[in-house]
Length: 143
Image (cartoon, rainbow, N blue to C red; front, side):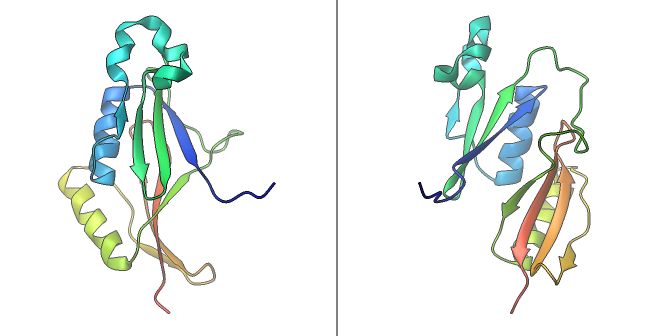
């Protein structure tokens, strides 16, 4: 068996509509698949055929899914527990990071400053999603 790449990541969220709007703004696109209308049937959150009542975004060659978690209202993400630490989304350049920072600021989304990590060859813009999941936008440092 040869692993050829990462296919998708799905995040559990406490408020699917809020997270859908946040990620649409962040990614600059609407979901490729939106099953939130299925949530009128309580069984949808347990049905993989209906994507658990969630949404799916295309991110380059990969997929980012959001899954509503009933009863999670008020819960927030903790990166120090076993499981996910953060999600990093690749962009092409520093100009993309700066444009994202401007777009996020205009939308009222708090974010950090772009930091350079020379030993890793990257520059990173960090932010938190509505459930406090740490996200990074990552671009290569110029050669």
